[in-house]
Length: 345
Length: 67
Ligand code: SF4
Ligand SMILES: [Zn+2]
Ligand SMILES: [Zn+2]
Image 1 (cartoon, each protein chain N blue to C red):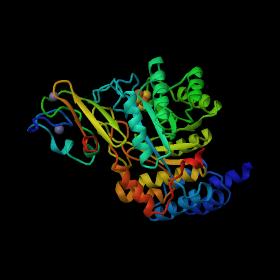
Image 2 (image 1 turned 60 degrees about the horizontal axis):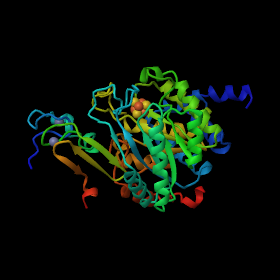
Image 3 (image 1 turned 135 degrees about the vertical axis):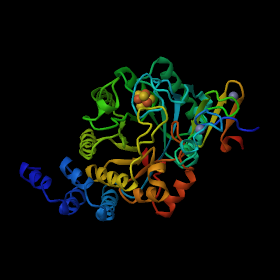
Image 4 (image 1 turned 135 degrees about the horizontal axis):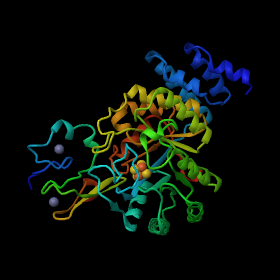
């Protein structure tokens, strides 16, 4: 893109941003710039339906109708030394979550429950700064046991910050995707986490990408960030160009510094979903934690028709979701096919 | 057995602030405190259920795990 067209695209009036997006994103597949995302986030309420419809068209055009379904499980819960202010698993806040380890039979059972929903992705998650030897060997044994049980679901991991050796080890175990969230805009991150930096997280993502694993990287909205920072984060994610972006909406957790934060309004959540789709036309955009509370049943459907093309079904790490069957029947009602395992191999 | 303590905040049933503990948010949370003794439990959430273990009163589980 020339400097001149970039200039004209970022300075169009608010009333035109959806028309610009139609031509730029839908027709040409070029994601919105930071200024444009901000304009979208500031559209008046009576443009929301138009925005969602456009985001849906963009998703259908550049990603297709399929929806990727994933289940997740926590293999090491609580007692984390980090201080991410949203997290009930930090050992630094007086939350009611106690440390727990999931054993190998429990991992096999969780992978089975996930596969039975028709999901093609199973993500193994641990509340750690980064994995130690014990955790790496637990993950290795768990993956081997899942395979021995005859379950060929795709396996992803989310184990915090990695060293190069650990990246290589995960590749060798057959982990095809790695989740590590940047969580929020770079400019907001120091307000949310003080025990490590955004750049340290970026470094892990870079190694994961270079090792050939799919990168899964998203964040949480509703942590006191401004609209400007939401737009900033959208383009920072677009620059990273992950395979998948999971979108979480803050669930204020008892005992954390964000305990008394309000959950964001449903229409704002939908607006953010659609804006992120317009910033990243080809990226898998996943509904993750907090959608039940922020959006309810109707909002979940609107999100699926507003840019989302992947979901986590069933429970989360420490919170419960709605039953997987409800999401699966929603997808059936929406006539959105679930991505099959054969498509991903 | 009667529930003596709130499973979300660990206070006695009389002292629990119902507005804080019986709402949309806590309906999406597994129990954290033992209803019999208010000890903090070790809780494991799985894709379609949860189990919660009190060191004194043993394990409880969501319905999908009880079958
Ligand atoms: S590193 Fe992960 S588990 Fe630890 S406090 Fe932060 S978000 Fe929670
Ligand atoms: Zn209570
Ligand atoms: Zn007890």
